[in-house]
Image (cartoon, rainbow, N blue to C red):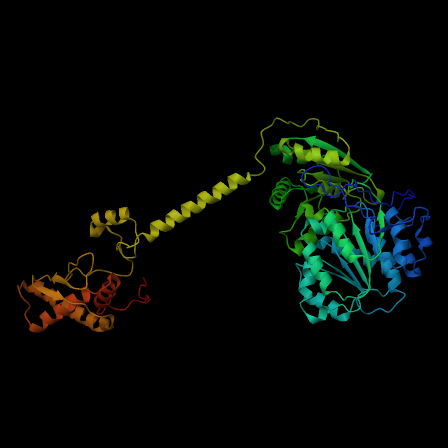
Length: 600
């Protein structure tokens, strides 16, 4: 945030049409010219060499002195006087140059000269970590003032944030998504907003926040306010957004090209993809490496690397978008306190994470975008300190590396680690995406096949009407005693009837006594009567078989048999099963657990 060393050098303050911006798929893209609508800071204005020369409020000067800072950075020396005048500002400076204090100090100084106890300042940032970091810096600078501030972001409850809106804290630092969540309610109106700050605007563009920013602007009051616009790079969409937001701004350009900080020592380690984790583990044995912020391309690879290091007893944690806010906060706090030697992160942490005295940054994967590389290595050598940035380069990543070298106009040195076996066979660090997709598809196919095999049969061994022809033919040839039986039903060994497989509405049935009766269609409403008659028919048929009589001994048995055949020849197989099951269990003792009727 500040610089402790003296540096009164000044870079050009005019943007050039050939200045590099965001590198997407080729070499560095060009930045849009800004001098068509923004004035530039006069070159003959003397720069302040101490914070005392700014004429800040004595409470702010006291806090800065207690923090141990005396000399402002170039971006602070140029932007603070302009912001103190109330002018809109468009500043482009490299990461780690002290942009946070460059906009906080002049705004806080002006707040102390006016009425407080209402929200006057809104600062928008792309990530939760950056919002929390700005809130911490605000707390340090406002230690001797009544100015209050709060960080508003997702992943935590909205209750305390709602209370802050209602109480009217002076400064709100928010991410666009959570801010829009609050704007749905009346308590979040900001009628007295006087200052608007966009920090890391180019990162918001990369993360797709530009539509959200425009929606936020529509919720803000259409009153005159001071707008400060800070970005590490200036691609064309950001220039267009700044044209809409700023009024007669002053443009400050500290770096013509997006480049790593001057104190970063950069080097490459060519290595195969399979040996990256082993090389990382070997490098950690160097006592010069105190702490490491390691960057991976994806969240999956971050998890794999963190698990690998933990298995090898390296104090480590991870931070990426799939982690909860509590996990991310704990990981970052543990890394800053020294509890973790390695923090594995995706590019979500490449912007705005201020880790003091970070010794090493290791790019476990070469980033696809040039600016991501610059902001990764910019986590070390902050505030004009020194640090090392190491990059592991696999053969498939050489094209991305060439883009980076063209952008920074420098060929990076390639190193090898003495004593490391680059020919050893190592376990594959990550299963390729194509193989993972193929395995998932194969598993899903097996699950569908098992599901079809189960659905080819109905419960009780009946042949399903939806079964395949091969399955129906196989089941028809199988002896009935070999077919699987239902667990909660049984067949009567006596009095059974031979029914055709198609179960027509009108048919002929022959009972065990050898008599033929004609069955007619019976409606479903007669099921209770059919069940009772079927039970009587079963009893009479058993007595006939025991007596070896050719005909029923009582006329009512013929009627009952006729009713039984009628119940067996109902229009649907499920009706016959239901009737038989009820008739067979009518006289049986009740089980301890009653089962519901089977539904088809």
